[in-house]
Image (tube, rainbow, N blue to C red; front, side):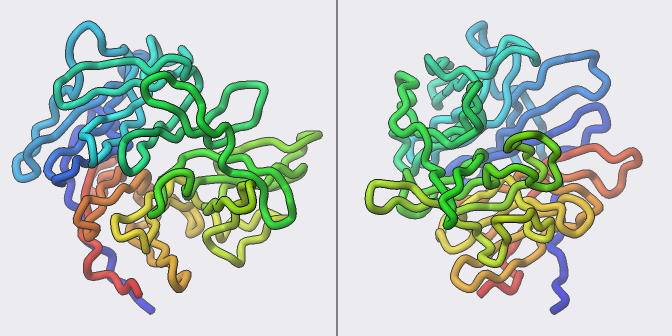
Length: 321
């Protein structure tokens, strides 16, 4: 089946900046994203916002002396209007989790060193994160946004063969936490041709996994059920999932067709639909509240050399089941 890819509607268009990892608010009319100056000599990445999609004018999202120098990986809670993000004193410092509300008060969450990709539960009372504190392997952890105290250290569990999983980049499912989809891989030696003497995590060789909890234990299975759990299969590669508001669809990024592009998976039937051109490197898609549009970052097709920009697409015309 031939599918016409939806039109890219660019909100940023800067040859001097790289714009990345966008998220929208509960009314779908404000986007926050991270911006890094190109050739800036190590200038920090900071969060920007756009409040008018018709005449977009990026401006800093955070202000005041309490804002950390480095600001990345924002996630917007539609229930509470809080934004969680990673902050650090510099590019080389350990990230921690921060949050800010519509009152502009910026707060660091204690005890969250090396918690990456903080993502809100549906009601805003808990956060889930990619936890890559050493020496433990990366896994998804639920924690309290006030104290940083873990509620569940590892909600990935094991696969159908009983093998533990590496996991990160979580997105919360329709039943709220602890249900998630995430980017993961089995902890087995030789995965994707690795010559490491033991299991070694490499985010380029992930599938999208869905977790579940039953009989007191967590288990996870590939979203695409035919994906091998013994030998890495690049035709099922996937990262950065995002669950749709209707909870029937997951958007994700994959390089399975020669370059990173955005895809949709209909969870009811397993159908995969391509959304963007792999030559443009589309990544980090998230849904608008309406569920018929995606915000994403992608290389601008009219610029050489290409630069990553923020754009939105209307997916209502795609043949999802």
